[in-house]
Image 1 (cartoon, rainbow, N blue to C red):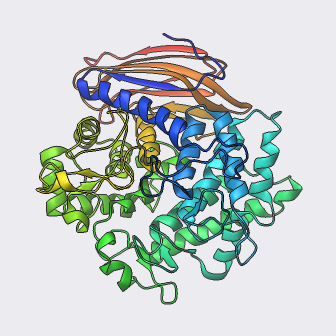
Image 2 (cartoon, helix red, strand yellow):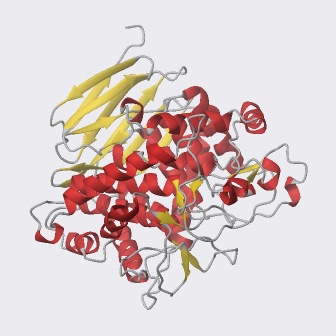
Image 3 (tube, one colour):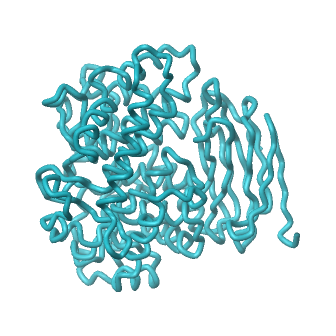
Length: 512
């Protein structure tokens, strides 16, 4: 197997069927595409290091969407591109200015070369999470850690903004597509934004050093704010049928009628982010957590899947539609629709769901149902229309190929399939989740967090045609923490452990 080499970006290669090969090429080509075309490289620009939302003159080609860049920052870190991650963080820190209360909170987007502030908390929370992910994976001697700490611990830090807000009103009001929703202006209590703020607080409370004078009381304050916010989520955001409520009116703490009646919110798959984004902080074994937020997240997923048109599309094609009403309910995308749903399916350990979903995404990316303008047939794009849409060939491609978030979220899908989970301090778990028929994975130079930064891991996973993982072997560039590897399947798991392993080769016979 290829050795793990420090400083080499990670790669993932899936095999076993046509869809596995397609997905591999799509991940590789799309990642290379956004690095070459979306990334702003002009050193004279204050936006240098950030990524535009789209390319080639399409809508949003000259805008920097902060949620999209936050997701890209997360992926740059997990794929070992630390220099690019540092440059992106620097751009994000440069582009935000204090809000009306003096805190650094990000808007939905700015134009290239402009600074701004706002209340788009899904973007702001994920920027904070990704900043911590970068900070804890850099070696202690790296001077860039100080810049990250200055952002996280400053008086204007987004973390301090949240702590102050929750002390006043338990929840945080935000704007944008994950505030009131698509096309709605104003501030709302949104379930996805507040869930993401909760995970952000969990991470900062766990990682800040209480003895750092700049973090005085912030560890305890973050932990207390997380408890308050989660209690408010449980008290106000769960509907009578056990599902999450999308948005509340901040003045009344009642479901927002305006948000409920908006066509873009009806059946919006983006609500699955309340579950899928949890993995960014709490790892890949969420079904074992027993946390109170798990039940409404799962109930929301199943309720959405049961809606007649979505269920018909999924049963027929493996397509998870993104809306009930927008574009006649016959559209999805590799981010908020298919992407978040596929991440949820993987985290739920449901191969009967994630297998057709992954196969459809791979095929639909390579062979769209309508004309797509792009340089590579392997680039992900924004709008995927159903084969059953009678006017699909005349539909608008919108932001089109290399829409940034529509590349970032499939990169996370690929990582969930590989299953390398390094969120815990004392152990690393490897939980492969290959779709049935995808019988092989070769991973190279995956960065794995340790107490002194990270080591890089190369990995080979073998599964049989039924999806049973029969072998996992790996080699790391340095000693790993306690290693736990799941062979077999979620229903029939065979766990193996190894301490301080540089190399391992674990085999499980299905007959046993």
